[in-house]
Length: 119
Image (cartoon, rainbow, N blue to C red; front, side):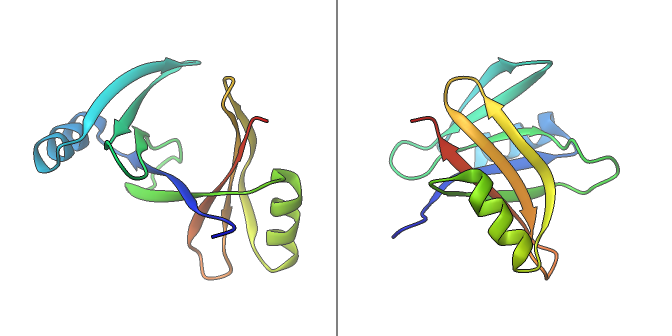
């Protein structure tokens, strides 16, 4: 598959409650890491695609899951999405030494993360 899903992220209104729920529901390892000015919880699932959990940064927005798709060139992917009627929700953001991401909204209102790994 040319653009696989590589990460799933829960943007939660109540991180503690979400961690308690998913920690008991699944055999996930939840590991808190400090990132900039926030705590990010890595979701390690063993085999398969893992993810993360964080406080929803969008004011007054409900909790929601966002899937991230691997792209070869983040800037080109964002421009293509916009040309196809998508909207840029969060501009390119660097993640330590791992890579960078952007979040788009498709023409139906669904959010999707785009991820470019650091080469």
